[in-house]
Image (cartoon, rainbow, N blue to C red):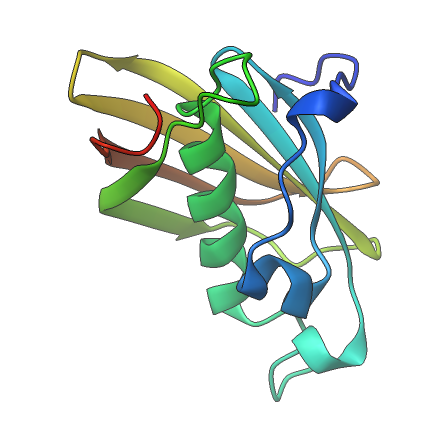
Length: 142
């Protein structure tokens, strides 16, 4: 994970969407081509083996990669995106108790873009990676 210092302009922070609120994930960084979210682990997020459910990693990756491509720098001009494809790779179990997801826009054009993402714990263990293709939505303030 390419971890730069967290930067979050309070004027650009959007209200949490319902799933984000449900799982307790918060944005910590958002800038051109990059986003980062943090999620403290708790019992309700675990699977029957006592480790975070794999779907949790997919939600984190989908979110961070989506936000990575939707930054406008202007609160009045929100850019919405939708996921066209997404691949999730499960690499390790977390050793820590806080997950951080980071998404990066890595290419694309006017109507679609490509992104990559990572999920790590606070100890630096890379838990999951992902990549995806996203489409910019029209008529959403862009």
